[in-house]
Length: 249
Image 1 (cartoon, rainbow, N blue to C red):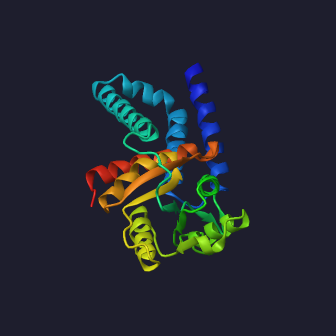
Image 2 (spheres, rainbow, N blue to C red; image 1 turned 90 degrees about the horizontal axis):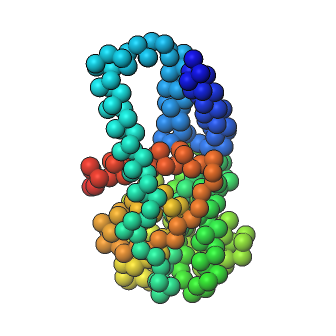
């Protein structure tokens, strides 16, 4: 009975966190996963006696072992992503800094994107000659393209508008790189094969893989992330990495 109460308290707390995050975020895969986990935890609380009986059967134990193995693989993937394995750090000699879009609420940058922009701002101060590209189109729940809001944010912090190119058409990480390189070439950068990418730590691994596939050597500046966004971002990114491993095209 005590275990059921513990699960129930955890389910209630997790559901409250999901509702809180919903008020701060647009609909994303990570948010959908929070809802699913909340439903599972609430279901375990309500049907706890039935589940206990099921787990004492042969097939119930088999399903439980498979679920535990799946959760273990999920956790190992998340730890791998967060370790920045295979991601190189900037040398300071790169000519281009690309800031990847990360969501708006109306016209306001999300907390995830704000961390990226603040990291980009610090890099721009350290390397005042680097060309800045902000990249991101307009998605669901966004009143303007992400790149427009990103450029506005950096300009308000003191970065010259003339120094920033805004790519406003991309809708994915792949398009971020493809369209940014195209824009750079149109603005006098004939070869765009070494760049610095600013994104959150959880996204660096996949961003570097995608850039490499497009012939771009991307060094990564790993921005932080809000504690409230940590879980949904990693939940989504693990699925995205699995998908990329299976379908890299």
